[in-house]
Image 1 (cartoon, each protein chain N blue to C red):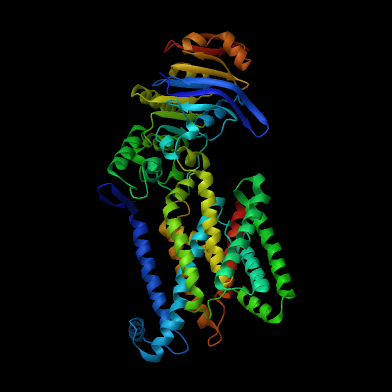
Image 2 (cartoon, chains in turn purple, blue; image 1 turned 30 degrees about the horizontal axis):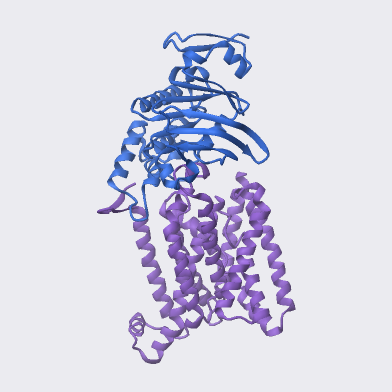
Length: 340
Length: 257
């Protein structure tokens, strides 16, 4: 396997050629899907119109593209990448491809937090994100404490996570049933996980939060990769493992919860993106960059599919991703249990 | 001279105390073998040296400074450690795995210097895995895989090499191949500390033998000076005679059951 090395003075970087090629291809695919997303809508806009709109021209259709379609497409890219890395983080920490945030109850926990904010405080965007993150952290702590005797790895944590997920889902249903009608309707619609109707007002704060989290993650991704060698080798080669794990879990919960706060729980992306990315990039461990790029491709594609399938009735992206993801989860479980 | 020392260690896993008031000076530039029966605390001592286990009393010191005060990467540039059964990530190739040994020398802005490249090539050469560089690790035999892990530790370029039962899962030819490699590294000036199962191999290759039982050091010193039938009987509860190894003249334990 060949690598590309760049060196200048004390600065040096090395990238596997395959990772580089795959990343460029993924970026091209993302750009293509994004363009398709900007063209598609109640009225089809030609790519020429889209480019005109992006430069600020194009009259009414330009406003539609800039104000309605662009935030949604960008949200699909950023949220997809955030979900992808969240999946990579938790699958890496648990060293198990099933140890994904939506499987171990973090989405459900974030949703609980958001529901509480929604019913009690009626919630601004920032409050919703805070509530989601706190809910996600409570869920993560719960799973950790319950599975601690088995260590932070293995099927045990995943099984306990599935149980916590079921409990939190029940709590969520209870909150929705007790809520006032308007809140309940909004909450149920939201629970499917959807990018429908997202505007600039909705995505501003989440973009900033996710941007900061992804920068922190980029700075720690080498350590995370080294941690994939197992506790003993990681510590012996200079990884501060306890602190790294804590930071990664906080970043992962932050990513999952922020997306959930805005778009609801979108299943499957965090579960599948890291594994697909890993296989496509033929990279060892659960690498972050392929997971992020694959996540963006998946969510963009899923959201487009959701818009087209029952058009003109908009389908939540979460419904499509759950249908596809459910099949993947069954396959993964069958393979894991077969092996165990 | 001893750069690496253990002073009055108490080592425990939760409630189970393994060692109390354990002290050891590791001679520099020598091959030290730690021997003893199963569960005598020899691996535990090794783990305390590399901070995988925090002593509940006492301290491990490197150059007069407690290892607990070292920054992670600085300690990893001085002490290399090979655990008993390391697990390679899925799909990793030999060169990429050995390159992970360079981690403590790298930073966010320097992920692959010329020195990194040189060290990895030299480490693979020394461990005899240069011709396997592009092979997936999971396709290799147990002996080849163990040499790849040794290469990873060598790429770390540490003065000290600590190995936990490095020969355990190898056939006899590969065991001696690995011990010869460790002896060569010692000859090049490195300090080697290995937990070994086979007392005869320890006598043959080590300059300094540390015999442990029940978490305590029973005897230590040059093999010819400390290894005799009385010691083996005391440490392993094995009646035996000790004769000179016909090839090297070092002590050789022959069970007398």
